[in-house]
Amino acid sequence: MDSSDIDFIAKLEKVIDQRLASPSETSYTARLVASGDKRVAQKVGEEAVEMILAAALGDREEQLEEAADLVYHLLVLLRIRGIRLADVSEVLRRRHAAA
Image (tube, rainbow, N blue to C red):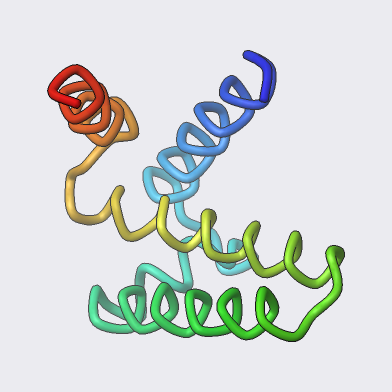
């Protein structure tokens, strides 16, 4: 993973912010969040299960697709709970330093 990969994930986090700040009917992100926190959390769970199944049974392309879905939905859930990637990164940094 290089810095452009991390930069894109950070950009996606900003796109999610923009979609929620100016929701439109054509935005899946806005519609998902409008369906409520519980539904967003359910989507993360569904995508996690699909990723697990793909890892056990699927080919690489299916695993990549499911992983992308999981990361996207997790970013949305984190956003609506007021958690930023920087917050998650800090926890990981602390854990690494303690190891």
